[in-house]
Image (tube, rainbow, N blue to C red; front, side, top):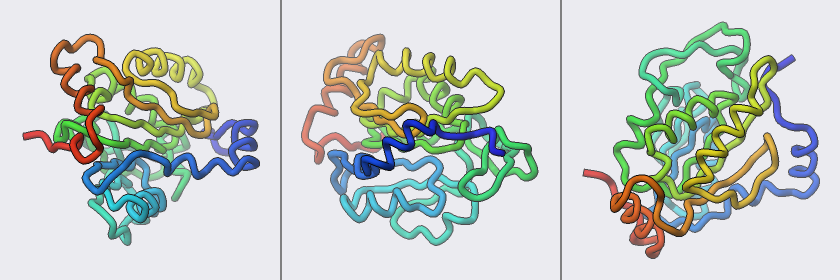
Length: 222
């Protein structure tokens, strides 16, 4: 039995109410940058590209992503360092929390985020690694560059995942507001429409830029 799961009650609501459409409803344009962590075959990225024709970076360590043609592919696992990560499980359910039997190359997600001043949407579905990755992003203030964060938090047997979740939410609430959420299935956060605390003028510039038209807010950093 898998150690990494979703919440049954939330999943039933999500399925019964046919809420999958929420995952694709963002104010995106062809100038928007979307980063898809845990892209698998690229289904989410394909649908986002079909709707908005925006720039896509699909991050997936397995070979399943190799046929994705609608954007850039990084065939590595998103992590908190550059090197290797041990995984267990296969295909869609590969996780660092399962009994390990193979490894993938990984990279520091902040190295990627550092290249861009604005990210319109970061989608995260990385089978339990979201806790380390999001803490890493937030603790280095890169979340302030991200307008929307869509994440699937997981239940993980044998670890204090609920405490981890509460700690991330406490930090994320300083800069973002939850738009919708179904515990340990899917949730979406949007940057607050005001100056971000703690970074003075730089934070204000980033937030003010987000309030401009969608055609204006995407810029690649120098």
